[in-house]
Amino acid sequence: MKFPRQYTVSELADLCGAELIGSGDTLLSGMNEIHKVEPGDLMFVDNEKYFQKSLQSAASAILINKKMDPPADKILLYHTQPFDAYNFLAWHFRPSIYCTEAISSLAHIDPSAVIEPGVIIAPFARIGARTIIQANTYIGSYTEIGEEVMIQPGCVIGSDAFYYHKENQEYTAWRSIGKVVIKDRVEVGAATTIVRGVSGETVIGEGTKLDCQVHIGHGAVIGKNCLLAAQAALGGKVTLGDEVIVYGQVGIAQNITIGDRAILLAKTGVSKDLAGDNTYFGVPALPVREAYKQLATLRMVTDKTKERS
Image (cartoon, rainbow, N blue to C red; front, side, top):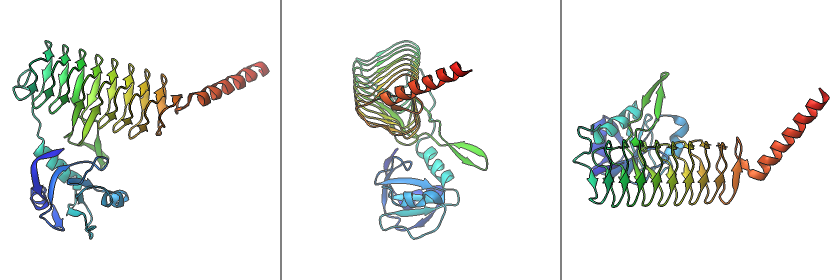
């Protein structure tokens, strides 16, 4: 998420009650989670296992629960509960905005777009030219939809991320301050859900087509001209290259990257990164020839066992 303007580190430290370690004059332009940080971002870390990764990240400032000397390119904000401080800032800069009208007067909708009855469009959403949104779809705040997009009935686009911080055996939701970005000429099938990023963007690339009942998790990035069949589900922060084909009921675990032009056959389960220009099948996913050989071997062993019994 980007701030409405740049803030000094000292301003943000004062806001969340953190102790500054380093220069307070450094300007910050946004806040983000470790997977998405850029120069100018603030992030948090509260587990020593991730301290080094955080200190080596692109973030300019880090909310942290340990006092230490920061690297030359980092400013630290010491806080005993850095997650709480981060979440406080998230709520401060992106408070809940509830719909009090079906189509918010704060949304920007191109005059050529078609909005059918029953559609809800939240504040600060943007709808491009010649886009069609069919009945009973929800478009969340800050969602950006390009030109010539088709969204079929009953979709939910821009709902909060399923992302929690566990402490003392309890789960606290991260404040979802990201958004959904749908590029030009995308088609979204009926009853599909596309979740906003926790702090960054969930992106559906230009020309991609989603079937009915597809689920896209928070912060996922889908390339251009992909095809995703019914009941496919992508976990948070999954990355698909261009022209990837995902058949029905495929499940992809979080943080997975799949290369350009990969094909995932129906019911495949993906738990590791997959290279492009190949076809995969099975749980866990394997190149299709290897998967079929394993199935054939298992069938022969089973048949021989039956013959002996």
